[in-house]
Image (cartoon, rainbow over all chains, first blue to last red):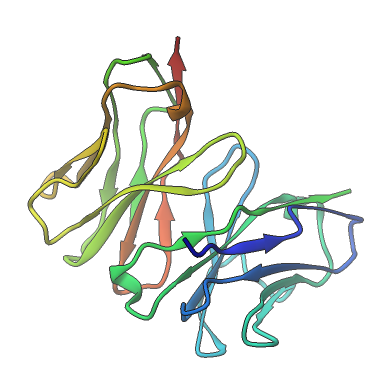
Length: 115
Length: 114
């Protein structure tokens, strides 16, 4: 069964550095998402992306964050200047076109640790 | 505001027994979907079961079933014949066609006792 793949599985970065989290959604999916889960807390929506633009973003997704689909297969989340509170598990997800009739397929997540 | 509430931070069940995890939600939408996701220690998010709000019949997937009470805005998950591999965090999630995001509850940690 096709899967959403995320790399790296664990990223350790110094505070203030830029980090890029990578995701390869399922190939025929059209909607892409990033979620964040701070340790011990619930999963929170960050951003959704369709047709090469952001569909919706949460309050968490401030100017430090950006997303892009640079080559038609990868879907990346960039944090420009990381803070300690950015330490979390980041999940990528994707759905086919009929978004509300299909469950989102999640990747295994990237654990981001900011030192 | 759309919210999802899981009032049980932790539950325990004996192996082979049945356990029910609770979830309530608040919405003014009529067309929405509800999901249960399982998150084992590896922290993957695994879809367990989903329910379309327009369907009156409760969804079932093998040992997993839901009790969907639309008027009460309640969506509980029943796990029958619990197995050690069922031990995980379980998240209830709400999704509406009016938005492009899941709203998750705070999760219930399920422990399965041998």
